[in-house]
Amino acid sequence: MDGIIGLLPCTLAILAVTVGVDRLRWSKADSFPQLDAIPSVGPSGHLSSYYGAARFILHAKSMIQEGYDQYKDGFFKVPMMNRWVVVITGPRLLEELRKIPDERLSFDHAMRDLLQVKYTFGLEAQEHPYHVQVIRDHLKRNLSELFPSVFEEIRLSLNDVIPLQEKNGWVKVGAYSAAMKVTCRTSNRIFVGLPICQSAEFEELQSKFALQVMTRASLMNLFPTLLHPLIGRLLTNTPSSLRRCMALLKPIVDERLRNEELLGKNWPGKPRDVISWLIDVSSPEDRNVRSIALRILVLNFASLHTSAQSFAHALFNLAAYPQYQEPLREEVRDVIDKQGWSKESMSQLPKMDSFLKESQRVSSTSLMPVVRKAMEDIIFSDGTKIPTGTHVAVASGPMHFDSRYYPNADEFDPFRFCPTRKEVSTKYSTNLTQLSFGQGKRACPGRFFASTMMTTMMAYLVLNYDMKLENDGVRPPDEWFLMNCSPNRTAEILFRRRPMC
Ligand code: HEM
Ligand SMILES: *[C@@H]1O[C@H](CO)[C@@H](O)[C@H](O)[C@H]1NC(C)=O
Ligand SMILES: *[C@@H]1O[C@H](CO)[C@@H](O)[C@H](O)[C@H]1NC(C)=O
Ligand SMILES: *[C@@H]1O[C@H](CO)[C@@H](O)[C@H](O)[C@H]1NC(C)=O
Image (tube, rainbow, N blue to C red):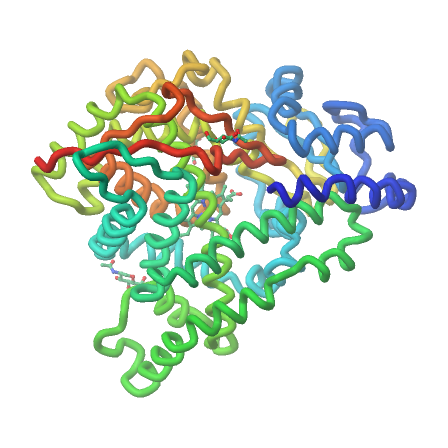
């Protein structure tokens, strides 16, 4: 992120030159449809809105909150450097949005703009999204059987990132990088299997690529659309990442294709992992190393930072409120004593489940996880018209702190989602909490895997460690960039191994 912030002066200088050009397009072009009827946050003049867009880079949270407080259960718009985003602010409108089919309010086209898909991944992964089917169907259905490998990788990688300390002393661990390492190894145990999931080179490739896509796309979005073809070509690193990923995966993919040819589709000893399933469902033109490697990059992009940030947030919350470690530990110990480690036992931890949900509520990684693009004019029931080409987002961040949906919304109340606590769940609270994984048909297909992975990591940690924060237990401040909220990337958490019991 420092890189991006360092580039800001340069960006602003180029903007000064291009704003003039862009203004001409302001009223006509696809990115700037007429939205006068929808109130804005910040100045809305042709030039002054650029000031709002610049503010949004580091102050998105307060700007979205401002619009939310002013236009409850309605709409407002916020300026980005290259477009307006219309934000909806209540569950009633969210329900309406959910029912509008993807052809009219498109997830893919919103991603094309936000992630600059054309320049980052290339459009082919969106045009042949067979990896989504693999996560949605195969992974979800095989999770119970895969659980032992998932658990083994979690155990091994956590033992690697938390070094043993003599005499049961405390040991400091960078929470964000630990979360990144463990989620990368664990999800890739399922994506590509042993031994590649444990390769340091593979891990570095995946975590760097995911971050680069984010930073490059965000950077591109600071520039007017007019300049994208130019900047896009300068910034992309996809060809080199793809080549490295292909080199690492080639031996496996080749071997599996060969085995299938020789021994048939269900050859004996065929591994159960995402690579096998990708080969199974791909059409003939996608049955090659290049296509499979691209899908592995895309899946890592979708899963790594989301899971690592959510998990690091949860770790900071658990270390910041150490009094909840013992109740969670008791719950885990109870279930493990009776049933051992399995996907089923991990789904019988209502306190842990509630703790992770509460952590996602108060420390969402995204202010507006749901974004869609209007492919035609959309008219909501209150008459609000969203013109073709406009991005529509949901203000889930402020809704998570609205006391109409969550009593004592400002309080971190880890067990508020326990089924025994009937008093807290309002009509909407469960749906709103799930917003972190998106909405409707395009909601995150990896959410079941992500939940199982995070529950298991946390269960293993509470059982085996005590945790606390440095600096008298004060949680380090989060780092905001546009709509993304990351926990502090360098802050450490102290771990102490608990005596074996
Ligand atoms: C805590 C972790 C995660 C969070 C918060 C998260 C969040 C999201 C969100 C908000 C979306 C967009 C949904 C929408 O707009 O309605 C999404 C899409 C997606 N996620 Fe996740 N995700 C997580 C983990 C994962 C994992 C582990 C995987 C893979 C195993 C994954 C794979 C995907 C894919 C492939 C899509 C695109 C779906 C499509 O094209 O229809 N995610 N995720
Ligand atoms: C694993 O996934 C495959 C493909 O979706 C499916 O045929 C198989 O039945 C699944 N295994 C189990 C135990 O559900
Ligand atoms: C919650 O979401 C489900 C589907 O995801 C929907 O059927 C239900 O109506 C929603 N409930 C509320 C109160 O909006
Ligand atoms: C992150 O935490 C470290 C160590 O606690 C601290 O030195 C640093 O200033 C923090 N960074 C931010 C952006 O708050």
